[in-house]
Length: 259
Length: 311
Ligand SMILES: Nc1ncnc2c1ncn2[C@@H]1O[C@H](COP(=O)(O)OP(=O)(O)O)[C@@H](O)[C@H]1O
Ligand SMILES: [Mg+2]
Image (cartoon, rainbow over all chains, first blue to last red; front, top):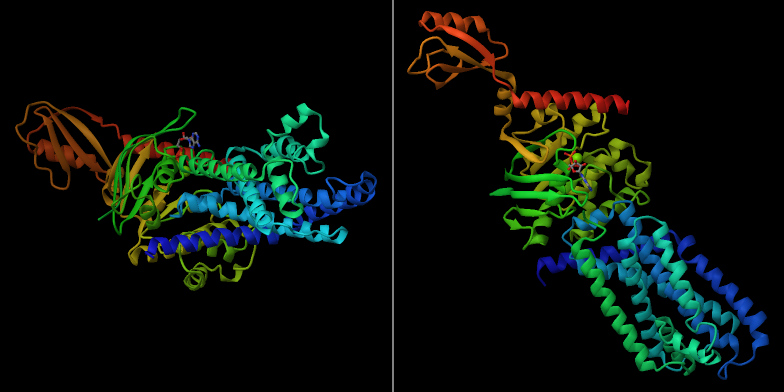
């Protein structure tokens, strides 16, 4: 390993360490709120309303929505972590600490992506534990669960970075989560199987990438899915590749970062 | 070896402002170099391009022989930057900021810890190592940025208006420290709009105004130019060579026109006496306009305006 590579490795670890410390330092903003949200969902949809709904595809409603709720928290928090950390660094100008350093752009992108992944997995793990308080979850395909959650988290971490690169103020980092991410998630099969929907709505739902992610993840737990799982993984992998390349391009050009 | 070499460097911002209009500049290794110019001259833009914070429009940049277009990482590794505006994370502690920055440059953590202690002590910040950056005074923030720029022990240290908002006392000790860094072999580029600051510290100087380098020479040469006036004398009779006037620089631009450079303390009378003793009559005399002096007067005036606004 030459000295440049060794130096880059240290720099890369430093980004990850800094992102991790940030998540822990402001845990009241990063970890607690999604935990509370998930608890409320489990109580209201799972217990109170869910008990009236009856089975869905052979599972209790609580068991059915648990993977969806975990995935929802992973999506929101992976995205939220990178968009606020990266935009915060831009806004506070300390992104310049990275821009002047010899660290190559692909490690900056990967470092922030792993930051988002860490938050996604931390929160996802917390929501899983909360779910276990309310119901039992048995995992049928552990590798499907693991790879679906990691790929999804990567997709939304990278998407958050793109949002942060273009954002000029704090309104613009909450715009996409509020007006695009949340609706797509709610219509992405978190709370229901799309077979309950009328035909045209089913067709429309197939244009929503989150549907594939949620169903692949749920398939890992319950062995049931509204979509082809192979197709779902192709979409996730494709998403990671395209978004990663986009981030790298934006950083190399310095869009939103360098005049 | 040249620490920095800029060739025909141009920058036009998106809003159409031409901040740099073709700059050529060389800074030798080991130099203490001043980039001097009024506000808005293009100093920060030039530094920004050198440190990859601003995209150039055209031209070329080399840092210790590494071209920014082809050997970016190697060039970046040579530079430590103290930017004009505070740019660290206000919510992190002093030591976190420093350890992170050292990490980005690939300095192993144990080494970074040692250097951090050394430099924080030198700049009287050691007591503050666990304080959140937000709580530091203006002068401390500036010194923190100096420490941050030195942790990877760069060959070139760039300071962009480092004394803005720093009181006289601190300023003096800061300069002593920077001199020490330079004496140990680090090349230093300093931008400022105060001649005094550059005068006290720097060996070589470039003056930038409206995106162009208008002077580039030894500090001593610049000071002499600022301290002298050139008078243009129209002679009654043509002469074949410049008369011999001891103690004055003279130049014959044509047989009727003599230019004399006069130090501001010197006496004009002596000249006329010496000339008439050599039989040379003078018909008329005028002052050659001193572009440089005009620039400095305008810089000083503008400087005092901004000071008034600030106070
Ligand atoms: N980000 C920017 N966008 C547009 N114009 C800019 C920007 N930064 C600086 N300028 C303009 O470029 C010129 C040079 O500015 P700058 O390099 O900051 O000068 P200095 O550091 O010498 O005060 C000024 O006219 C300034 O208004
Ligand atoms: Mg400036």
